[in-house]
Picture 1: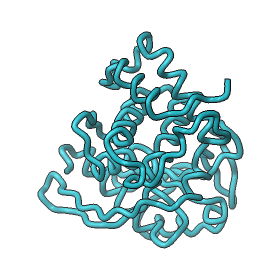
Picture 2 (picture 1 turned 180 degrees about the horizontal axis):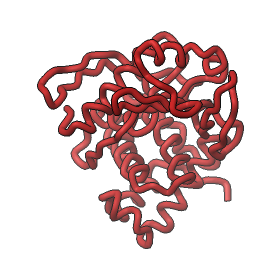
Picture 3 (picture 1 turned 90 degrees about the vertical axis):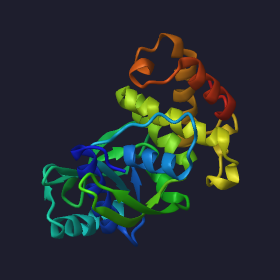
Picture 4 (picture 1 turned 60 degrees about the vertical axis):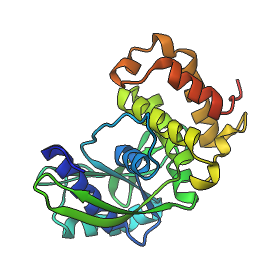
Length: 246
């Protein structure tokens, strides 16, 4: 349910990008991903937060084809950068897979894209299909279907985002997603391999980031802004995230 004008804009953008990527190898990611998963798998300790835009992950072939660009343009969006689009205050960002463990800027099909760690993994695993109904502040509603990465992959993506920008909102999302892993069986949420120690690739990078967060939680000022108790996040990480290769 939207509780502000900003929520209305974010949910409308989410509906539009979900329509644009329907039938494509693409996933909704970012804050909307975390929010939808928290709604789909409710837990009593989730910290509710709002997000201002909608992010979608697409493969390089789709990015090169220009298909999503054309669909968003037809829906009235104007590109403000290679991978960012706006319409009447609604914002959509498109992400492509990074070749390594860091965010980079890449040109594909003549357009610049932000390449994000974990996106390749998100596109490789089966998605969670979600039917969404949102009540807007004017009492109208939006109904649409979308595809999300499983909870484990959402944790990988949010860990990479925190490693890159250190934003409190990413800690909030990690906290909420780990509460899902704590409360639900792995078979209900699409699997949970990241509990296995010393993994490689994007999962291994996430393990390193998350255990660094746990080891420094009590002196991390971002946790206060995230409205997350340090001891709770530390316990969740140590219970559900395998120890990384040192």
